[in-house]
Image 1 (cartoon, rainbow, N blue to C red):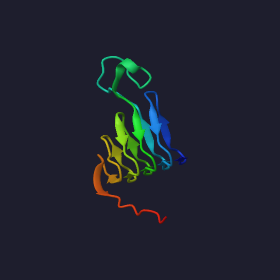
Image 2 (spheres, one colour):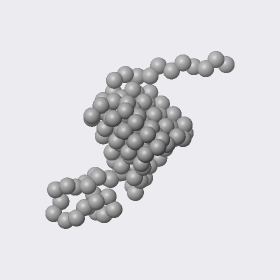
Image 3 (cartoon, one colour):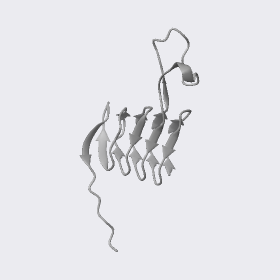
Image 4 (spheres, rainbow, N blue to C red):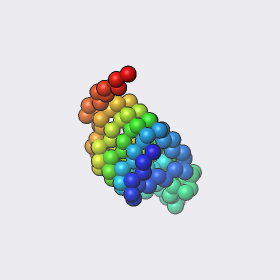
Length: 116
């Protein structure tokens, strides 16, 4: 696994990272978000007052692009490529090429098989 400079993983609700994953510089993974409209104090440390919380899963050999943000309850499939500056707020399929705010699938990777 490779974690680039300034990448952050905020994992109070769990982050599962597969083999060979690359988290590029500046990428942020959040397993909880705040409820900005709450009547009471809220922040990711107050589990009963989180707006959204849940684990993040990143499949084998996926790449999270520079300065991207991954939100709670997201599964990124194996070999997926997330473009830089993306907001990942929903699942991303295996072999997907995805980018944007919010993220959307732009294509599918076509991987060559290694010669025997």
